Length: 133
Image (cartoon, rainbow, N blue to C red; front, side, top):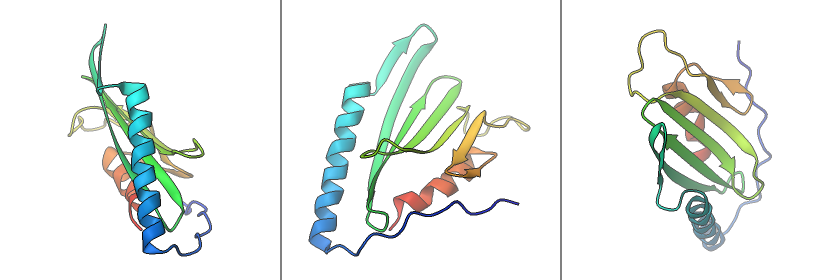
């Protein structure tokens, strides 16, 4: 039986203006982080082409800027969820790139905080909470 991961204490309520400012800062920091690491979002390697994209969200309840990096190659999909300010890794997924992996195919890594998962779909469900307020 899985137990629920410990939650961060909720931050004091912010004014809408302050929340909007922090959300904008989050987007800018995330974009800059992505640009430094991935420039245009693709890289050609000996194994083929690798592409990357990101998503960010300022979660006002947790007072945290989340940065979700997705890196895909022909055979592998890697996703990492970070707190962009603290650099803390909240979750990671490493598995097959196929939208419908073969039956019996499990990811090599699939976890979000203290919870483990067995599929990309389960990982998406766990991560969704960080992108909502």
